[in-house]
Image 1 (spheres, rainbow, N blue to C red):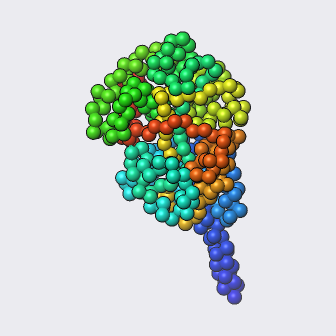
Image 2: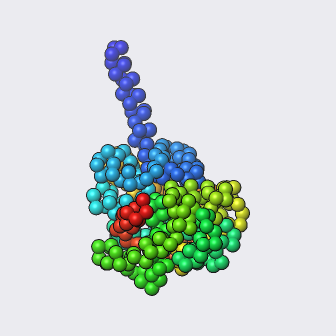
Amino acid sequence: MRFIAAISLLFVTLFATSPLKANEVNFYAWGGSSEVNSYLRWAQKELKAEGIQLRHNKVADASEVVKQLIDGRSNADIIWINGENFHSLKKAGALRPIADEIKALNNVSPELNWQSDFGEPVEGLEVPWGVGQFNLISRPGLFSQKAVSAEALLNAAWENKGRISYPKPPDFHGTTFLKSLLLSLHPQQREVFQQPVSKVDANEWTKPLWHYLDKLHPLLWQQGENFPSSAGEQISYLANGQLLMAVSFNPNDYQTLVNHGRLPAGVERHTLSDKAITNNHYLAIPVSSNNAEAAKAVIEFLLSEKAQQRKADTNRWGDPSVLKRTQKADKSSALLEPTDDFHASWQNYLEREWSARYQ
């Protein structure tokens, strides 16, 4: 009888604990921002009340998670991706089609061009979570115009030697800095960069960029021998006065960072070239997820009006909403004039060519 009682107790324990395990969701997301981390802690509390245990697995470089997923070595239920990382996972057949199952997509702004990710058709394999726009944040008076040309940046570097820099590629902010310079150097031919790099004479189109950087680098912080490792590090140097400029992919960072006391009041936001390279960042569920149903519930929450409104708050994260009603209601979050990001294949090409010249 004791044996039977023990077995009965074991089954009761297993069934009692299984719902908790069934509702654990491993979310692999960038962990390099205190604002993002704080937002996800709030989401964890909200979801816990709904019976879902969200685990934020902090990521330094999403490409490492992508490799693990392709190799079958990851326990990710949701991954925060876009661009070349999406392209790699799609090519490997590593993502579940989910768009038709996410009801919140009905509320996404029709103006959001989310069906193409760095030139790659999404085909329902990921859903938009937020909007990224590349911009410069500067100390007052560094630039006279809101749109900063490559020539204006070079002039500012001449006048402020050692006070300007950019993150070192392959950091994606650093690579986007290179893309923005290309758009400024080729203002009438931006459609070239929407094509796969193999379809154009990339060597010829990038020659002006390398000539430009050869002139710019000696004027930069540490004479271009070293670079900030990330946008976050560059923001720190802007805050303490070492640098006069930083870069960001959040068009609201210049407000959010002031509101959080991380930058002094009065910093200015600019585009590099006449428009801001704009893309969406996405949420996706790997085919290897052990908990796809709970993962979809998490995505529904993260795309809810409540969650998107909090995310867009410049006193918190400040990441622009993807929802039509929230975008319309948010008067403090003005997007910059957009231009499409490059085709995903340009990412590796520019990083490889930059490293060959400047490492």
